[in-house]
Amino acid sequence: MSELDETAGERPAPGRAERYATRVAFFIGGFACAVWAPLIPFAKQRLHMDDGGLGLLILCFGLGSLATMFLSGWAAGRFGCRKVLRFGSLLACAVLPLLATLDTVPGMVVALLLFGSAIGAIDVVVNIQGVIVEKASGRPLMSGFHAGWSIGGFAGAALLTGMLSLRAAPWTAVVVAIVLMIVLHFSFSKGLLTYAGRSSGKEKLVFPRGFVLAVGALMFIGFLSEGSVLDWGAVFLSSNKGVPITMAGSGYIALSVVMVICRVTGDAIVRRLGGFRVLLFGGLIGAAGFLVVIFTTPLWVMLIGFGLIGLGLSNVVPVLFSLCGRQKLMPASQAVSVASTLAYTGVLLGPAIIGGVAKASSLSIGLGLVALMVLAVAASSSIARP
Image (cartoon, rainbow, N blue to C red; front, side, top):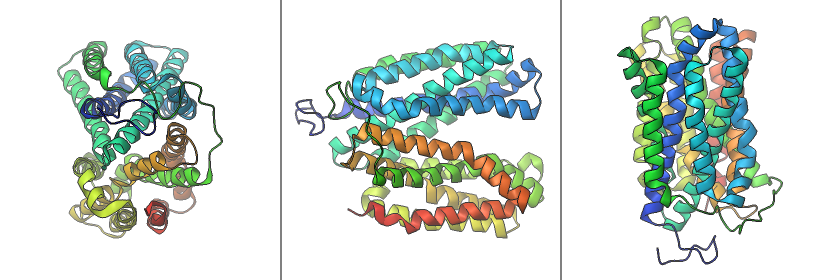
């Protein structure tokens, strides 16, 4: 901690404590987000909603996230990563009990907007902290940080699902999750940065620059591609490939398992191959995975295809976040914020885009369009050349 961080004037460079805190902050973000998923069927039951109404309700979560993502980089630059992450984490903890108990649609709309705002702020600012810590370390770290989000997501879903399967009340399960999140946050919060780059607290909003917008567009593709498997993978297997509905979720499981493994080992992969090759080979492998899924029939072969999608896409987004941290056109905190906003737009628009194409032609054509978009990542890999 004796070195000086070149992005922060006379501040000590982030060290081991900051690396641990960053991993924990990523874990908390993924954990909090996943805690909501097992509560969705209970919310649908309490509110007596059909699938269409539930879809619109869930959209409030995404809208809340987008509402805060663009401003989160500026807020981190002005108040520091620690304060914004603490605000987002505590807001998520405060809203989760409402998501487990509210029985009115207006109340759930407000709660989901607030919860989405909290997760959006966490998502942006953990990446800001991540790029600062990675830059100070002089070696790739972002893949490992993002693995923390994935592991947190698995842990959150597993905890809630396990407790609910044991007939615990939703609010009881949520309280256990909240206690764990608060303990983790305050145990490691000393390692959260009190700054977010060069700013001394007077950072101004800067209009996004071309390079940052290009990186954000590639992140849009990365998030849309992963989301397409989440939203349409099971439907495609059951409706187009004749896979039993009880097994239709196996495609996303295959993608998720491979993605977690590749992100845990991703820092070494990025260090060996470099960002350019990760984007090039990642785009080619990911597109090949989509084609395998579209043009083959045996389930085991299609699962290999889903695994290839996970293999190809796993380290693309972490590399792109690192590029945001290294560019000099605008403050890194705001660059991460802009790119995150574009990326998350892919999550929201992806299902609608693929659904529209599927309605006009077929779901196979819709997923084929995604494969072409992933090829665009490979074609744009030179953006990551040193």
